[in-house]
Length: 165
Image (cartoon, rainbow, N blue to C red; front, side):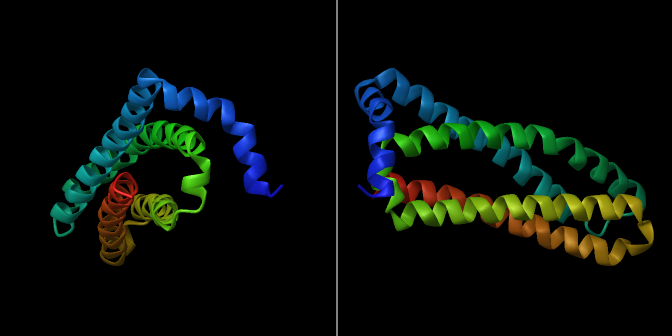
């Protein structure tokens, strides 16, 4: 028995329950999409604010950095809900998803989103700590914000591709 076959057998009771329960399917998909909407909505709104204020004066930028730094916890909360529900969705049809290039596209985009989120957070902290580097720092923050928005949409595209597989 291969590793995948062993895992499929291990999660079979969950997959069987999930496939027969409209309530579980509805609740899990709501948690997954709701977590993504919450996290992605907050993040893309913050990305827009960065683009809008990239040429603003110091006081507006300082306020923006403070507001953005407060968004990381709620964004991570939404991502956690989406990730946990995603694991349950994955294990509900492990054989299909484990071998799906569309699934791995989505997971690759999600991994890049997380890495970029950390990079974005580091850029914010550098700007708050070293105002002398503001021009270069704001360029990097704008790049990170642009990548953030792009990656959020790539993750959504991956989900749509999975639904239409």
